Image (tube, rainbow, N blue to C red; front, side, top):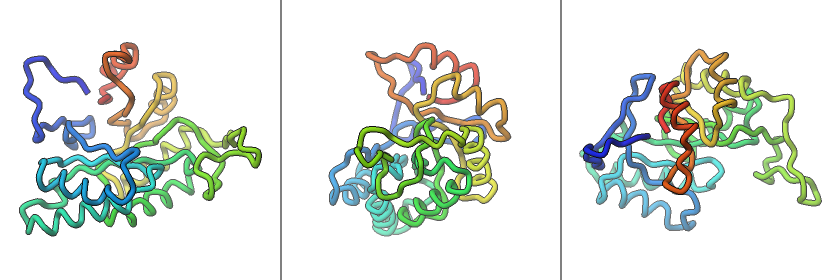
Length: 221
């Protein structure tokens, strides 16, 4: 997402997505957070640092702690902070791209997060792995080659993501780590357009082509 040079960025800053939902611009990421400390970090971030956007993923294996931290923060706020004040993002992992697995995946995340819905659900990577639940990286027995579900297209997965909006399990849907050509495949068939593409973006990786493409398609980076 872009910030104008003369625009003050605060913890309350929000941006309107293409589906008219609003998202907090600043969020707390939980990738590689130390196990056993995530719950307290999330609680403190919400209660004492005014964070309202928490970003997590099925892959991170800490959704339980994130959910407990959210739940504890809401309880301790004694009604001053409500669920609707928060913006929770999580992500669909590569093993769950088969359409019939997509709903299972979000329900699994919701159970761990102790939520009825998430505000934003992202396809974590534009790659489909064979579903081998004992190994999130889907390696062969010799641990050298990952299995890819070649018969699963990103369009198939996206249609299943749209169904989650219809079921009110998620408010908005988007992407992560996608390139323009991959996004084009989704836009060709999309009933609901992706509102976000979460990528690495900083002065050493400015993603100029992707930034211009995203601006044209009204997709927030």
